[in-house]
Image (tube, helix red, strand yellow):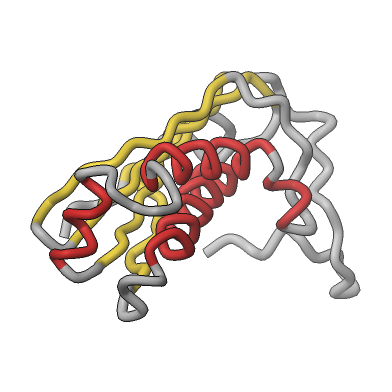
Length: 159
């Protein structure tokens, strides 16, 4: 396993120096799920929340968060993203699956931006639905795939 790159030889925190890295297209996909009561999911799907369209607010929150990841995670680089999407699916009557895709042409990857988009979208769903369902759970936030950079292509093994 590689050593942790966010610490110097003395153990002090540092931002990784990417000045010598080549500019390449880098992409990342992440996912997560919000579990809820079937009645809560129906409210979301039918767009009957008193607070508005839960999925569209969550989508915007996720995209906005991806663009501000460096303000949330101390050692992330500031990136001018080329694209960010957040999409939703419903694998069963209790689950909203969130998937984000992020890309940049740059010197460092966008894994954290994709994971941040999913996390903030999930938290937004929770916030907008908590009045009717405090038993919701946010689960399985994880990287699905990344491309570009020195470490190359990563794709999660399906389990």
